[in-house]
Amino acid sequence: MMSEKHLTNEQIEAYIEQGLDAWAHEHLAVCARCRARTARAQRVETALQTLPRAETPRDLAARICAVIELRVAQEEARRARMPLIAVATFFSALLAVWFGLEMLFVLEDNGALYFASLLASQPELLSTYSFDAVFALIELLPIGEIALTLFALLTALILAQQLVETARPPALAFK
Ligand SMILES: [Zn+2]
Image (cartoon, rainbow, N blue to C red; front, side):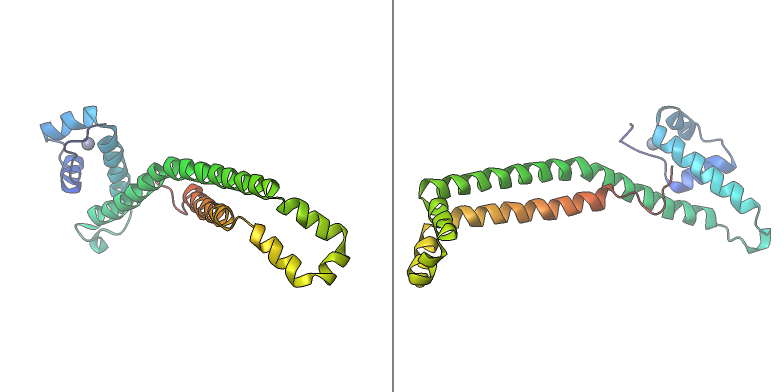
């Protein structure tokens, strides 16, 4: 892809109408992007010629092409963003799993899981020592790990939503 200097819409217009510009001709030979733009402009021009002559303003083709270019640029930007969002989503999900496991290890380590299962299997403990039991369980909760897990999960969810949005095909696609 030639990145230094592409043809302007006006140059493409002139090239289609006169086809004399040697520089434009050379550039088109090596730049697929401008070739596609020229082909597009050609199609718009041809389509416009089927309309009643008097009603088509002089720069209508150029204006239509400018709108199409904008859409194409947006589409390219969308496609360029997608891999990055996919990677970010993947790592956020990985992080959420990691923090979640960390949280489980802490819960297992400090006996919170055992304590919770004890309360579940012997509900009378809870009714006898209700406040003490609940507070004791809360004290065992690894708040930091839980917060990190929730935060990572939230991030992964938001990124996944963005990914779906980005991957969704646009309403109008220009080739
Ligand atoms: Zn070009």
